[in-house]
Length: 101
Image (tube, rainbow, N blue to C red; front, top):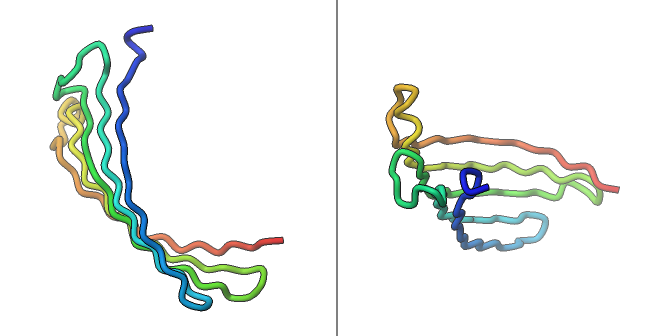
């Protein structure tokens, strides 16, 4: 179905370093989504990038704690349809505990 076909392009770079029980990671993502039936149409297209910085600590053999900061910058033409600016910058801070076997 042509009207449900999208061209999705993405790429990322990930750099991580293990320091004893700590692991630091930095990731950069770049993305673009375009409908195939209307290529290059700004109203339907989405472009953006994201940066993630994460710190993981191994508490013991079974437990890890991770803190991550994420920022996504995007330009989505469809936001104008609901009265919002097409460009947005969103941030999130997460904390996770992981229990393994």
